[in-house]
Image (cartoon, rainbow, N blue to C red; front, top):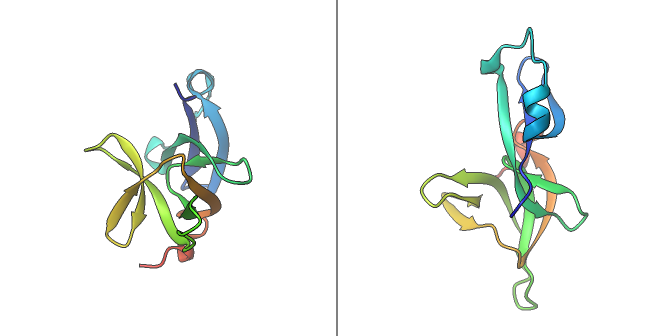
Length: 118
């Protein structure tokens, strides 16, 4: 079972708050914060090739870990409600995140939206 962690993007302060566990979030004091200005980003349970945790709405460069699949793609990590799974948004299509894919986090949609090519 994967560890449940959440990062929070604060639209008011335009900054990412450090990752928190569910227990830590329950103890946080967000007084004075407009809850509508916060976006919660869930940990996928996967790490990139540099051992960084991959969260929802991260932008990743990825490729399959197979010698004949050398092409890299750039996608946003999204949650798919229908399949209850994290997916890689790929030009109108979605690929499921798996352990046999090599990932590298290159940004996120809040701080570096220009990295997504539509």
